[in-house]
Image 1: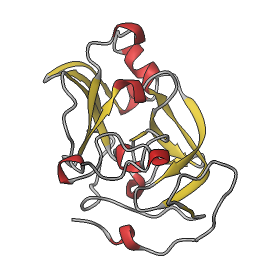
Image 2 (image 1 turned 60 degrees about the vertical axis):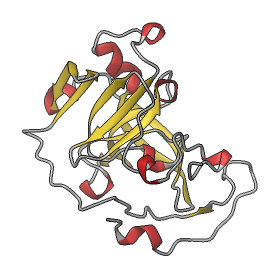
Image 3 (image 1 turned 180 degrees about the horizontal axis):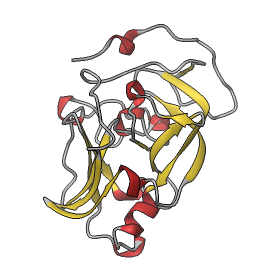
Length: 204
């Protein structure tokens, strides 16, 4: 299932300062794009986990998650459906801090790959190198307000240097995997990495 936002209208502005990837156009809005219905996530039952294979390493409920170090990030985002939005403002927990709280050191992580999971069963694969050293966060706020459900609230993965399908909405786990295991869109023909500046939209 693909929601209406995949083909919705957008501002066809362009940028010539090198920030806009090829094939993209700027929007001042924030289109709502999902692979299925928006789930209702209750904060009192929400949990985020770090897993090594099927083994849980560390989990946080909503209160303990929000006691982790909080960071802010201003960044551009790019959707595979060809819209980009500049200077978006986010707040949440950097993946670096999350892994540290789970007892990991960045120089000795157990595998090179992860699957990001969502409460609705969605998943997407990422090299761990695309998540660490300040590259990604689990975001809980957008524009200084709590992240709304249609944009992935209460928490979503944010990996802004890759196409936005990699920034899993309604995130509830990062799972270390031995191999680069394809997620929801990757099994349906999308690229295994998704670099906007290389136009890595589709695999093969």
